[in-house]
Image: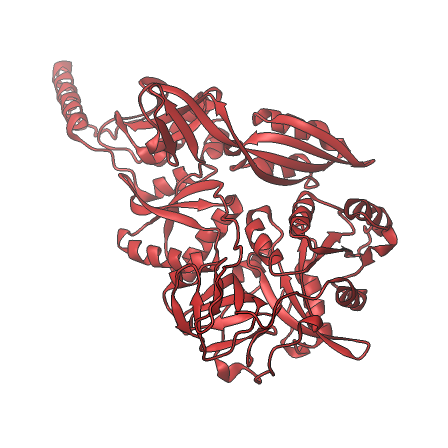
Length: 622
């Protein structure tokens, strides 16, 4: 979120608000259940956004969020609300709903005392609803169950209120009914938040301790840090210390977001706001770090956050090699805005210098790549996503494989692959279809429960490699969009995996290698060779494209040579002259094949390494 300078701020607010008048809460829900629309109505009702400045999805600041209609970044906003002549300050955090952005949600929950659990009155509870609810319960938050979209013709508020009450343990009458679109019931929800969400607890006289729960990079003002104050207070122009790095800075500006940045005279216990120190080094502000006062520092840091585990790895390479330093700086700045991003440099014979990047899922990968291309004007190639494997050689030497090119060539004792515990919610009519899909993807069923007469919860253990490509798309298409998926780490298991190499004219091309299950190796080899046959241009000599497991070739396609018509000048005469010319051409092509090299254009790499390449190739074969 860009931070405008002080000239754009309307006024300097008074000193910190009393903790008993503060309510910190967030909105959690499944994707597309109306969180952002409800947040819009709250902003209007509390008067922090003027009618003329209002727009749909007000807190979704990025173009990509508005285009796709999804929330990617959590956004904090402070709103005033009056109940019985008492003015309260409500700090709301609007969180993402997709499983790939669960880390954003977990950090937001740590800054709150309560959570509004939002459920679509036409769709009911979905997988990510459950996942976010369990996260909130782990943080010991006050849960306020709310049914949204009650104005829809397909809404069934009575049915889903009972389902929601059973889930959180309460009475269906206590489940609030609201419409984010029309504003119905939103005032009652704000009153309920003031009544039920506990006030923040902290020691105002202790040494200052504030938790960094988010940060962004502003091109003019440097690193902007978002904090929740736990103990003590912070004031402008004092010196602060980041407890993990011991770096000291002067606090140039401190304030609250309402919903635009508004400088104040300080932040006290329980308040949520932002800090600006003018620091340009993005590594100085680490999410989960504790900020304290340099003059009277705290002795013990706050707990911080559990580091997210990357689930999917992909290589990112600039199309133009000279853009490598730009890509490195862009990833540094994006890491500040997206704490779940992990990356390290790597090189590829075919693609040059780039980075191996860890993502929380395929949507996360897609969003990060699109943000890098839009915000930093880069052209990127991303390799097909893969996961981490633990390989044990015959002599019990362990090898960690994050890239198919690292897969050892010697004798292997066993290969372990990561698995996930998946929860799938589906209407009962699609149970057989979903079971069939999970069985195809080597899933093992762990249990099944009927949440109601027509809704079923299926629990499976699935290999992560089987769900990172198109599992979610397949699930949605086979259940007409009604099923929902959530997953979490489930350890690892031994699997019969092999590395499939792609050879062009006998030479291995690392960028096209893949680690697949032994039963699917032939299918992958056939699909990839067929794909490359379409993409690689014809040369003066014949180019064999082979897929091999070890020394055994399992599939082959051939790009035919371009042939010059050497007989064009021969008309009539003896056949032996024609044969002599054809033999001479054959010898020349044989010699060229020995010394010639196969050139694979960048466009071919981009097309072949896209995640749906194998699927497209299979479709073409059919």
